[in-house]
Each structure stands twice: as structure tokens, then as C-alpha cells.
Image (cartoon, rainbow over the protein chains, first blue to last red):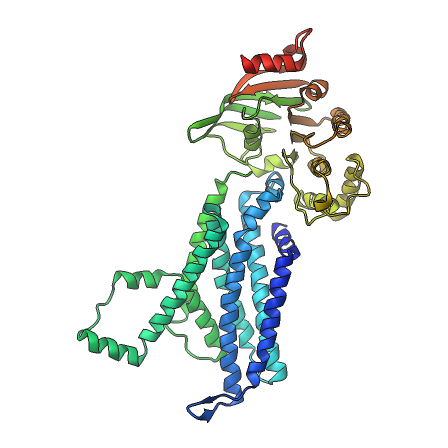
Amino acid sequence: MITKYTLIDEVRQRSFVVMFVICAICVFLVRGCYQGNYTVNGQSLDAGTIVRTLSKVTFHIIGAGVMVIAALLSMRIFRRDRNEGMQACVLSKPIARWQYVTGKIIGLWFLSVLFMFILHSIVFLITSINLQVFMPEYLAASLLCSINLLFVVIAVLLLSLLMPDIVAFLCVLGVGIVGFVADGIAAASHSQIAQAVVQQSAGHPQSNLTWWKVVYLLWPKLLGVQQLASSLIESESSPGFGPAYPVINVLLYCLILGALLFKRFRNEDIV
Amino acid sequence: MIELRNVIKRYESLTAVDDVSFSVKTGEYFALLGPNGAGKTTIVKMLLDFTRPSTGSLSLSGIPSTHPECRTSIGYLAENHHIPPSLSGWQYLLRCAELLDINRSEASDQCRRIVELIGMQGRENTKVCTYSKGMIQRFGLGAALMGNPKLLILDEPTSGLDPIGIREIRQLLESLKGQGMTIFLNSHLLSEVEKICDTAAIINRGRLLVKDTISAIVKDGETLEDVFVRLVKG
């Protein structure tokens, strides 16, 4: 019931409809890029390669973008329910607080997964119908990225109970950006050129474990999950720690933050 | 029906409710009176488990207030009641019915009956953002009556209503008297309380000053207002 109301109330918001339409139009307009002539080192790329590469780029952009949107949707949900009297209305009925919070999480997660899936489906349909390149794994990859959206929803909901909504949003956005940048640097540092430069300048083997490596290992692996998902599109091996670690990392964060959210809301004063 | 035992609620250095104990019997119309900041709304919030007492216990029909099942037969109207502006009055009532697990057809029947009871026929399908404060208050009371609750907790139910509306609410509450409903009322309108309530408690600065029947509290030649002012001002 709470999940249903969460979905209905969010979809009724004009800002949500506008956001969705703009995103869908932007994704649709990208279709022109697939039909360009691209050359690398003087050689023309074949159409199939262009489609797959551009689809992966679009995949990542959509994945990251919807994470931001999920954070925006989540940051105001408790405050809006409070101000509109729905929180008091629901919790004055025989509904437990954990049921209310669970309904909110599932509603927001489902809505943002659906949002992302529709955008990814537009890309899938463009490549399938217009370009005759069929990538069913594209949709499976989209569903894998839903783990990231669950993390974002739970994290923002928890932080919105502890700090102003916009600060909660910025904190989670910051975590995501730091993770993306760190993973990017880590990926670049594993390249042959980077390793050669490091070894030349250091002159001795790198130490195995430093504090920043531990922090990096434990940081939410949002980009790792996205990379794992995109590796399904081109059937390539996933970079970094292997396929399981990013998923386990993000799921563990979801469990821990979820437990903290339920505990915090249990002690929250209802206005 | 309602029992409070040695309830204390502290917010950091402030004691909002200070060792309050009283009970309300089934079928009783009970009023909780006190000046602003006395702790009335805090007691209501603890009854609904919106906040937890620092010590002491509260129970409804023998079930601790911390258990959701104690709210199965409760209707609640908040002071300064709000309804999501994107809903219509009808949609809001239906939503309240769904939250109580009432099936769709019975919910529609109840909504129809409640709309008539609160005098909002013809306005139930317009958006709440077009309603006046009094209309929102009426729909709030209607939502509290959804599911035929055994206990009604009303926090300033006549807030925002004109004198005709106040009279209609009083008449509505009086009509429910014979149906075995228990009412727990927070109100500043002492004249209305004197007309409809059986018992009352007066609190000030979190402490219970008196709890008894209206006839025992109000002596000959006095009004409830006289007693209230005398007790509160000391």
C-alpha cells in the first residue's frame, strides 16, 4: 500500500513528468550519433563497433544520470510526507514504522529502476530497429545497475533524516563522484604506460597496502557495478576486482545503511 | 480504554510531561485541557507512538501504545490537519480506507456516508488545494471516522471552523455518543467541552492538576473556564 502511494504521489509531481520527458527526448536525439562515420588512426570503424561503443557510453551516462535523479526523488520524500500530513495519517493506522520505510524504499527504487529501464530500452530499440544490431544483454545490464539505485535511495533516505535534504543529496552525490574518479584513476594506473612511469620514478616496488588503498577498497563500488553491467554488453571480462566484488560491496552497503535507516526512523519523532 | 501510568517525557532540559497518570473508560467523552505548551499534544503523540515516553507506559485497550495493533480501531485528527494538495477529498478518504484494509466497495460506501456526515457533498471530487482550512478540517474528521473506530483522538477538532461549523461538529460528536465510541479531545473551546464531555483533565507545565467528571470539577456558580483559570494561574 505504501509502495503504491509512493509511486502514485511521485508520478503525480509535474517536475517528475517533465524530467522524464526531457531525459527520454535526449536519449532519443542521440540516435543520430550511431549513423556517423568515425575513423581511428585513419581507419574507418565498422557500424557494429560504433553501435556497441556508443551504446556503452550512453549506458553509463543513463546509469549515472538516473542515480542523480533517484537521489533527487529520495531527498524530499520524508519531508513532503511530513508537510502534507501523510506520515501522521499512515502511522496513526495499524502500520508499523518499518512497513512505512520499506514501502518508501521499494516505491522509490522501483520507480527509478523503471525510469532507467525505459531510457535503456529506448537505446535498445533504436539499435535493434534502426540499426539492426540486437543487444538483449543491454536490458539485462540495465537491471544489474538497479543495485546502484537501491544504494542511492537508501543512503539519501537515511541522510535526509540526519541533515537537510540538499546536504544529504550532495553527500551521496559526492560519494558517487569520488568513487567514479577513484575507480577511473585505479583503472588508468593499471595500464602499462602508467605502471612503467610509476616504476621509473619510484625505483623500488610499491608497498602492498596503504590506508588510502584500504579506503579505496571499502568505498562503495558504484562504478564497479556499472562496469560489470556494461561488460555484459560486449561480453568482455570485467575490470578491477572481478565480477562479484562490486556487487557484494554495494549490497553490503545497502544492508548496513538499510539497518541504520530502520533504526533511525524507529526513534524519529513524528510531527 | 486508555491508560497512562507514571508517564514522563523529557526533551533535553525540558520536561514536557511530568509523571502523569490517568485512565479513560470505554464510551467516555474525555477532554484534556491545558494552556499552550502544557503537554497535551505530547500526550496525544505518545498515545499514537509518534514519540516515546522517557519513562512510564501508555496503553490502548490493554495493548501497549508501541504496538501497531493498538491503532486498529483508532481515528485521529491532528491539530492543523494537512492533506496532500494533489488529492481530492474523496481520494484522501479512499486512501485512509485502504490503509485500514477496507475492501473497495465497502470503502466507497463509507466514503459516501462520511462525505454526507461532514457536509461536503459536491466538493469531494475537487482537489484539496482548492479547499479552505475548515473544509480540510472536515475531511480530516471524516478520515478519522473511517472504519468506525472505537476511539477517536481529536486534537483541536474545531480549529479553523466558523461558529456554524463548530456547532455541526459538536452535534456530530454528540450523535456518536450513543454508539459506544470513546472520545479523547484536546480543545481550547471550554464552552464546547463543557457541553459534550463527561470527564476532563487539566494539565499545566506537564503536570496533572485535576482529573474528574465535569460535574465534580465545575462547582455551582462556576464555569469550566473559571476552574481552568483558577487552577492554571494557581
